[in-house]
Image 1: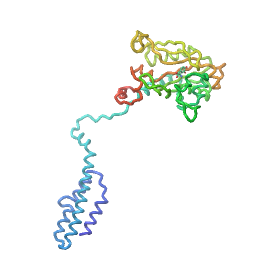
Image 2: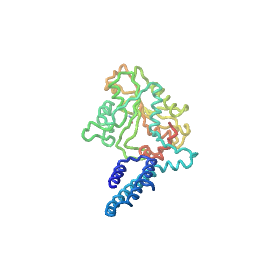
Image 3: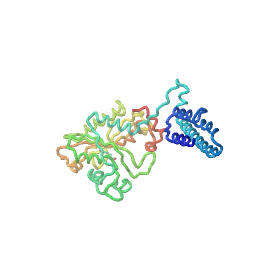
Length: 341
Ligand code: DAH
């Protein structure tokens, strides 16, 4: 009898019960009224008295062991099946919705901008977020003592003051021109960093898209036509653009591009501060010094460049009033864009 007890114990220990059905087989075989363990108690009746004490103890240990396994597994399968069982109550209920993620609004607008420029031959070029002084500043014609190089704007890498987090994606212009021969038509989206206090209107990191076109005989008219095409595609066919003179070290002449307000159509509203126009980017003809710095002959080639903030454009498109929403990852904000692909 002791052998039997030992054998059952080994058998139970070796079991690998994975389902409710297997657990029921286990119960029937060992624990049910006609099961093996109750039958041990039957046999026990005919055991000589002097063995009763020790054998009785052994049978009880086996019984408790089997019952414990049964209880544990039963609880485990109940938990796992809880949801399933609820759904099985009414098969005509609609399926449980499958919540997929949504695209971030900045990604939606970035992709749309890339798509618009891709149609007229621009391809995407990317560069590093940690950049050296040459690509972020010097090659772009920033004078040695230009305020943008100073600590308040730029995050420098402490171990190597020649390195900084790029302050704009214009650095990718330089990297591309150093590697490729004209004609060049690139768009470079990416994250940029500035040492600014975080508010509704400013952040220490944001995203830009830089554009660059270099070829023979590129003119201001090409710049204007390209950006007018872009503005109409992004904001609607009625959109107008205007250029205001501005200054950037890497372009000459430099301009700022305004579009007619997409909210009021130019009549004047809160978004355009009643001017009818909203600024969307900086642009200009690439300064010949920049071309030469990158090994491109400025007597043969000319080109235009432009740079825009993706946050700014996205805020205009979706009427978003606080820049911080983009990086807080609050799903109540992010979910609102689920209908846009
Ligand atoms: N890099 C400028 C900035 O971050 C934006 C810019 C202005 C880019 C004019 C350009 C440009 O390519 O031509 O403010």
